[in-house]
Length: 305
Image (cartoon, rainbow, N blue to C red; front, side, top):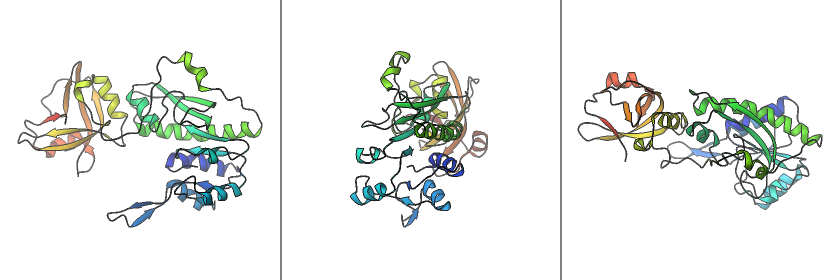
């Protein structure tokens, strides 16, 4: 069960390594286009159909017709990767349980955006976890974990790619161990003594992706920007000398640079940060150098709205 590209890698690994995948569950096709008159299949659906797997796309996970169809496949275990919260009637269905692959080292970063928040918080280590589902989101008993580093220059794209492949291998290991009755899941409460502070990973919205410059040091602003790159993108507001304002997305920056009259060099309380990879509203993404070459920004400034 899954939807985005992150889930495709695990499904591909299972198919190519000849696991008996009996069916795939994914989101309904999404309306796209200017008039929302075109339906776009999820990456998981596209891959599943390409290898001849049955695809279930319930609007509601408690729908009786969906429940009966899912039950008809008699799956021994269900695997969830980047999907919706499941009702108990679904996750309790298979005799060997339902497990989820989560892109963090639980119990840290429970929630919808674990990769983003690990980078935003300046972590140097993350990983993937498999755990059995229960009634609450991301709180089930941990089966396996594998750690992975976060480099100082990594963006979400870099870590996403790394964890996607690492996660696919962990899904196979978890399935093998479940099949062999060789799992000893551990309650997340037993990790409490080793973690000073539990950090959440809430969903990202416009409100929590704005760069509030006055709250940041150079390092925290740098981490915030790369923790939202390339999606959804950290944003700020650029005000020109004549008072016009436009949204500016920032995808990467350089820290500890020299002071500059360039409006894309930001003074923070402990130094300067240069924005290097940006996108103005309605424009293409470009390097700051290209942007400044064609822009007239004398007197422009970055502001908070």
